[in-house]
Amino acid sequence: MKKLLTFLATTFTLCLVLLPSSARAVSPPTALFVGDTDVLGGGYWATDALTGKLTEVQSTDVYSVCYDTASAILYLNDATITGGTDAAVIQYEYNEYGDYFFYGIYAKGGDLTISLSGTNTVTAANSSESSESMSSAGVFSDRCSLTFTGDGALTSSAGSGSFNSSGVYMYSTSKIALTLTGGVNITAAGGDAPSSYGVYILSDGDATGTTMTVSGSTLTATSGDGEECYGVDINCINDAVLDVYNSEINVKGFGSNPKLSDGLRLTNNSYYGSYGDVSMTVDGSIVNVSGSTEGVSLYSINNCTLTVTDSTFTAVSDGISQLYYCYGASITSSEKEASVTVTDSTFTAVCNPSSRYSTGFSALSIETDTALTITGSEFTAIGDDCGISALDTASFVADNSTIVCSSSYVTPSGNGNWLICNGENASVQGDITLPRDITVKDSLIIPEGAALTVPEGLTLTVAEYAQLTNNGTLKIYSEG
Image (tube, rainbow, N blue to C red; front, side, top):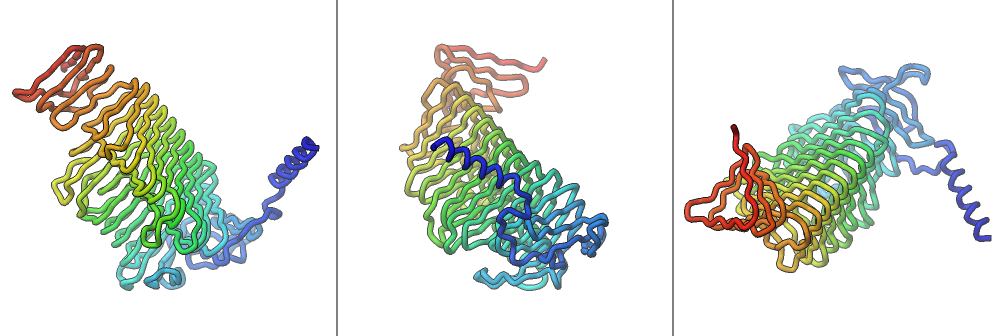
């Protein structure tokens, strides 16, 4: 009987997979505009390469835009879409400021899949000169989960805004998801605005969580210039999840004089209260993130985790902020536990120095009872003030790994190799190669069995009156 039930369950699942899209259960949007055109009723359109406007065509003609009502799939094929300033504007009824948004694509309610072929562009109009409460979004999702798929590319650009400008803007009062899959290539670019985002996902009210997944695809997300600028910002009341599998993401949040400017921020919304966990998982991927203030910022009152496996992960802060801190990456749980786990990967966190505003520069900031576990990896943390800043309750275990750290509040344990520069002192364990120019102001200790190699083109400077204790091996290669 048990085998029969298993067989029936498997058969039922296969039947669901083999059903045509029109027969599957879908929850289509309740409103859908592409540029100035309402496409909710379905049909085919060509787009003008110069104006970005849509013209309805027959199904047998060459089309750039098609919406299938049965499957809730919007097909874009070498489409050029431009939102205007008249029809392509919507009042954002759930925004506390009652803002108006100019948009390139607008979807409300349900779930929408956007299937891409060829090279596509979506551009929203500038709104900065229209009103104090005008915003711009290339793709604007109002309580609608989005899935981008296909082998094509999409560049979604927002215009400048007097309030907000986002390449992709998503808002919901319930669970919402953004998914990139199937080899799709997405570029999301915010314009100049007081608040600017490449990708912005906000869920509040009764929201049960937010998930962003990048699988087998490519994402490039950049902000414009403003007071608060984020390449990717996921901000919700409950669980916030970012998963990156077999993909490449390049994210930058830039502000020339920002209050806050992070490459990637994943956080519970403290305005509404924080109830869920925050997690970021990277597997088999390349992740490059930079921000003026922080490269990567993960924050939760509850559990907060960063897991990197078989990947290259780089987080850089430019050291620019009106606040008193800058971090290459920060992982913080204010009341529970946080963890950073790096396995078979190359992990780099850097905080570049700046003479303006900020006084705290850490490559990696971990707080509360944080477990930092590095296995089979190359791990580098270089900050102007500190490589790793952590509470004394944090743990740091490095096995079969190479650790290079400008300084650390927590001492690593395990069988790894490392070079730790704590303040004016430096210490070596195992076999390490100098990754950058280093000046030792007080002491450098190379214990018995350890080896430090200075490659050609780099300099190890031992200051006058500093002490070099070499009980191991010191190899220096010079030019010529």
